[in-house]
Length: 209
Length: 360
Image: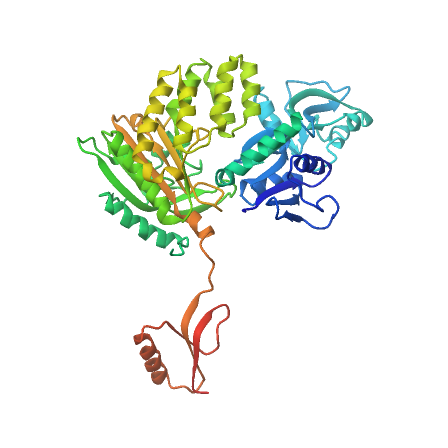
């Protein structure tokens, strides 16, 4: 049997998603226990899982190193990989938001300075409003930017909103809801079509279960 | 059975040339440059938007060809007979993620003029046989824009909304399709049809009956289904390798009917891509039809087996070896049909069938 290669995002979300794969009959023993190994195989059901950095899942799938993978909608919107998006797994729910200081006043006569990890999402969002912006690309602790005056607002993922509140920030606008998606390589999906469709059906039943 | 391996780009090109000549297609050679203007007018037809330009001696802005089809169509003349040509050319374009230009060996075939069902099917047959010449295992996905156009036209949506639906269709993204349809007020039955169309992926025999049910109610879509049926019938010998897939939506500004992509296992992108582009011809002010495809030979090198370069005989010599004797020995070995490398020290990274030493 040919392997089905699955790229899972390292971390809580990936573990949660794997449990639903497991419950749908695609288990791979040892996957959740051994935290050093990167690749796990189960010859009985032909499943091969590997843990990758969440933002890399889409790359593994697009390039065909993985047939399917689990990636957040935020990553898909930001990198636009050429893949099939087969299902909304309904986990890892959060929102892509514009946030700023409570007292922030949006002066439309100025160019807005936006700090974000998600440059493309921010650009598309403001382009849709015909708004000129300056992007300040940061890799972490985005919340600092408006506090220190580095930017006017931030575009970032908001889960509970606690980090924002603790830093005196609040959500100004919601851009798009985010959740984990099941993606597939366009060619792998063709050559392993029957098994992948079966897997999708099993996951869906399990989700509805 | 003979073990078939995937050939490298140059070997594949030789095979394909033989194949295209067998069908009576003639080689078409062109210059490396075109006026930039040709590409600007048809920018979204190109695989990548970047074009390598330079200024000609008389100040004209020129481009290194990023594409061949446009040049062939531009230079074709209206005639009662079909123009059947194939080409093997280097094109210059950027990759999706790389920000630098590459020279890419591309082969392709075009059939231009008063097309009919046979002529179109013949091009697909050559496409199928091209794939067969490239790899032991392959699939050809076939779509028809008439089906998608028919279903979308029935919804009467503005172009921007159609574009969003097509994007979701291209991703087989049924959650997104559902979400969009609900937001746009599309009727439940039509939404259901779009979702089923997105997920349809089957051999013609299994897919056509399903497709007929989906297309019912739209004349455009039904006509497209009939065309597909006739086409697939002519391709019966390869029926088990054909798949109908309507997530394959090429740019509707250029493509007008059947579109197709060829895949081999292990390559994350299509190795062959083509379709019917009457609209492109029309944009050049011409009537009639055009159908063709391109084969991206550069992709094959990713699959070809990696071998260490091998030479039959390594002939080593010392500081005092007479040059004349050395040359004579090397000639003698080559006359036996062997490949011979003459060195003072054995080179690294090569394998040799035999090592001979002359002198100290």
